[in-house]
Image (tube, rainbow, N blue to C red; front, side, top):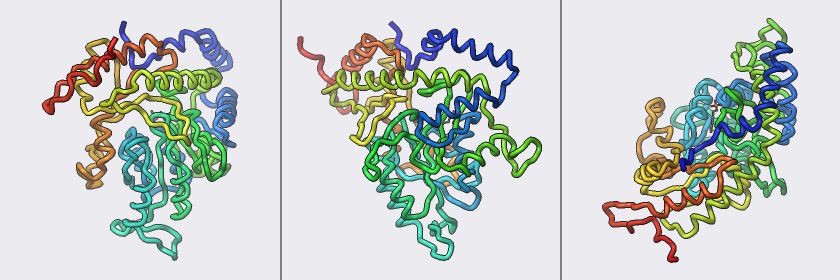
Length: 407
Ligand SMILES: *Cc1c(COP(=O)(O)O)cnc(C)c1O
């Protein structure tokens, strides 16, 4: 029995007839880019996220870049995110013209640590009354935005981040690319809020492996701000508000009609798939209980994660990966190199030790198989292999992560 890390074919085989129908109707209407299928999906996705607007774009990276730009973030400004994320979060900031900078994560949630954000803003920056902005003392330019990532499908601590952002006049753009349908309980508002509805704008990816995935590339920005929605509609379409009337330079970042049609069908199944992911996560939690050297995901009471990834951590990661792979079990690492240590961000001048929590996570995190159709026997096999893993290390660990239960 081989257990893949991810199963992208089963849901599509199950939905084959309705997905082919989308393709057929696009072929017959000749409407391939934009059009009614895109608008229908945008309305449905906005309703799903609890926002006034959703604007379909070409990818999650487009969504992030356009959201940052539409919020007025760009050249001569600093936007802050975390080192423990997919590189697109930082790329989008840089490509808007702004300078990316980092604050470390929380060791239990792997998301932005609001205390580290506050520390950065209060120690590295000074408030400038004349411009009403926070100036980075060393760089001499304003910090204007923060981009928290709802990593692995777990919402970041948004009450705290939004409060800090209000205090320092920062724009918050959510990277919700892994968090379709995730919920956060806002103490401040006294209710549950959907990922993608809390910042000024938010970016979603519909890359095939995401919780809501297209059969190709796709993304969307959600927002309650009509001006931002309007700007993104222009940015995705060469800056035109009307055909051949270019109010600004934009991009080719539109959403395919076929992808939108596919996404609309798959969106109807998403609540059920999310429920299954949450059940699988709870099941892993039970099966792994007592496994002392393996840290399972932490879900704070204010969060309902959607388990895009089920991420455990162990110091014996490399050995465990080899062992699981030998048993036919697929795994992933999200992510092996924190962004501040990537070659492409060398010019920022960071080194090993600057973001210790992210660095430790990058050495220890391991993503176990997780997808809606994952079966109980498969989860049991994964956990059986973990429990019977000979972790031979120089420190003389026990020869198994935990003793096998006594019969
Ligand atoms: C997938 C992802 C992106 C980028 O989305 P694409 O659709 O691949 O461009 C950005 N941020 C995070 C956290 C992601 O997981």
